[in-house]
Length: 451
Picture 1: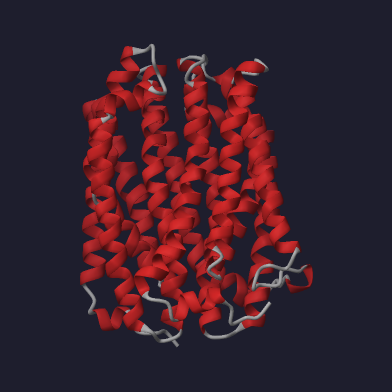
Picture 2: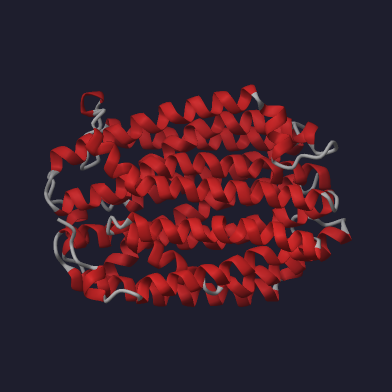
């Protein structure tokens, strides 16, 4: 396949707004589908009872951890690959892509084997109560096995996004999402497998996505040449991948820790609090994943043009992304606040306490969701430019140095209300940090190409 394909033209010469739409909309739809995996599981499992939905909420952070592994190698490689393509370093791009895929799979398998070995204490740490634990174990075992395929899917998804193959990625993820929606009610209710059925459905749908990506690789449809021969245990390759990937991994680990701490704190107030906050996290993740998906198309665009010296395209793309994501966040906040009751009722229909806690949590989080696009655009921009320090500070700040201490202090002072308020307060602090990092530099220095 020719290297100067239509995909590279899209990155280098297409009108900025048109390029962002072509790159961002397919990845946004794909990430939305990924978020729907969790929502669909929660929707059908929610019909089984409060403890069952609590079990799915407890296991949710495990998926976030393995998402971090996929992003460590996938997103880390994606940023580097876009810059390599911009510099016409095609051989190095092949080596980076092959190395990222191989390393991600080995890492994922080792982590998952360790989690399965120590599953009981691990679930306890994640917030499983005595009534939730049996269901959490049933769900977690098969869910973990499915995550092996998911790490591969996330890694390859990010890598082929770097070359502009966003439509193929969208098709793969949409296919998996549709399969999951079809299989969930069959396995959970028709076959009477309960929460285990939800895990089976997710496992099979992720395996199908894995097969679609393998077809893409084996048929040579990518601009990158994936091969064991291209795998390199070279310091430079891993240094470039980890420069961007480690902040992404740390962010996901902090997200998982934040969810686990939230579940543990909420467990003091019963299964209802765990279930309600878990449902809200899934609803909000849909909006956040859609923004992340759009920005997955934006990141290789700015990385490619940054490396090629096209600063004007980088600036225009950033302004456009800020405008579009802010409009999206405001629209989601208004819509979800207006539909807060039916949204929560869709997952829990019989428990009034879950409904009350869920509505309150959802509204408070949506008030600061308005600024989510602002945070994520600049974090993604810094990552795309290879400026891991600034991008990492934004990512780590929101779920780490802000959220965790705020959660622990607020929970001690205000109990359940403090737990509910922790994330909005952390978001406010994070937006202040982003404003400082962006505006302390002149834009010329920000976009100065590192040599």
